[in-house]
Every structure is written in structure tokens, then in C-alpha cells.
Image 1 (cartoon, rainbow, N blue to C red):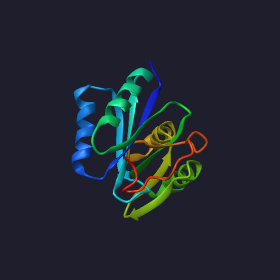
Image 2 (image 1 turned 135 degrees about the vertical axis):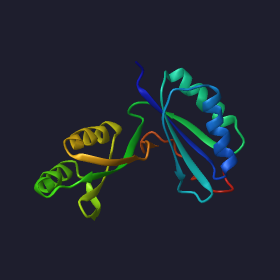
Image 3 (image 1 turned 180 degrees about the horizontal axis):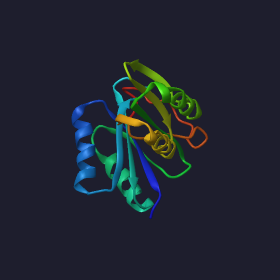
Length: 174
């Protein structure tokens, strides 16, 4: 089985550009594990992160295809070790009185934060690699998990890998 590869795509913050990019993935029936999109450091530019379970040649071909699209400013393949990847999860857990201390110990072990407490339920927030988040979810199985929301993986190239270049501006790229 191939290692997960990421595609980090900078695109205009217009819905049509995002729709075209996702359509390209859909038409090629690529093995997508997660898709996350959000604003980048440049106003009007969004970062789309796609995690795929595929070989490097397919990932490179997909990046080239995306880069040709109108509105895409940059598309980079992130292989294992090329970037920093993180995922966020919110988990609602029933916090019965007698097991509350055990739940807090587990949260401390995983550096999870309690972001909401009400009645007999607690919402925990944890972030880390996909494997770390999955490990946390498995550790919570001994409690009553009431709900889970995961962000999908976001990624950035490691600082040492990026070539020296001018920062992107809304007018500057392409």
C-alpha cells in the first residue's frame, strides 16, 4: 500500500475555482482520504489540502493538472516528511461523575482541551497527526462517545524546503 501524499493548492478564494479543483479530483476518481479548505495568509487566496492514498506519479500528475486551471496559483505535492500535517477533532463524551477524573487524565495525556462542559457531557478538542487523533479516539472508546467532528488534514511545506521567493500577494501571482 502506498503512503498518503498531500497536495497543497493555493487558489483564488472564489467558489468556482474550488468547484473546478474538486471536480478534477472527482473525474479522475482519485483515492482521496481528506479534503480541507480555508483562508491562507494572503487575503482572497484559499489553501486547499488534499490527502490521497496514491503513488507519487499520480500525485505529480494531479498537481500539474490543478496548476493549469484558471484561478490556481500553486499546487505542490507533499510527500512523507516534506510537510507538517495536522488534523483537529472535537469529541463529545458523556462524563459520568465516577469516571470524570479518568477522562481528565486521558485528556491531559493527549494534551486535549475541554472546550465545553454542560450537564453530563464534555466536548474535548485535540489536534495532531491523523494517527495521533485516531489514537485519541480509540482511547476514548471506553467512555460513551456521543459525537465526533474531524477537520480533515491541513498541511504546509516545511520551512527549509521552500525555495526563496517573493511572498504571494493578491495581485502578484500569475
